[in-house]
Image: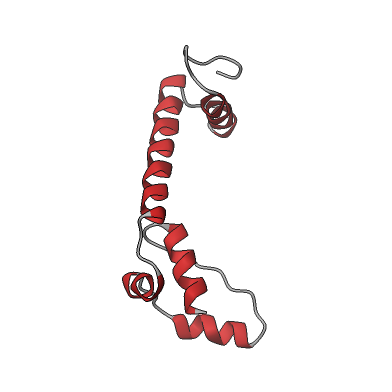
Length: 101
């Protein structure tokens, strides 16, 4: 689908479909369009959640962390830290983690 898209399609759609074609060469165009559409819908949801979300202490209480003591212990030892799993909006989780310290 590289270089071709439906009439009225914008540059982001062309780029997304080209990326999906490269990442998933075994999928047909219809399946790649479905994945691309779902990805942009999720992006829209995340943008709304992030812009309309709680701020400050309210955000901190809305986002829960398990094992925060492990995170702090690793930082105290000068170790890098990454999350193995997260559920929900990653942008909100990142904002709450920064606020928490």
